[in-house]
Length: 70
Image 1 (cartoon, one colour):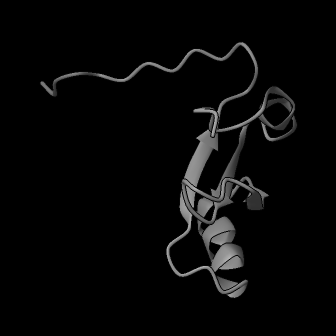
Image 2 (cartoon, rainbow, N blue to C red; image 1 turned 180 degrees about the vertical axis):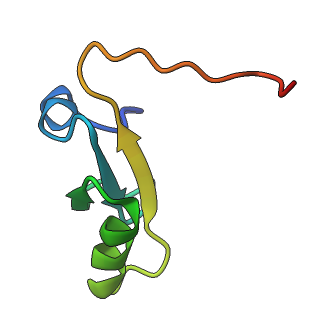
């Protein structure tokens, strides 16, 4: 299997949203939306016990993460 989490078309489709997938082996998007709690609830309501929640940044977005606090 190719080591790509989302296709380019899915990344464009879900940009700025949270998505839930069933597992790293089954990467089909099972729920999506702006509210991560709602997305998790929706995935779990489909019988997925431990969905993986991912935030998909909008196209051309830059995300900065601090390496150390303080």
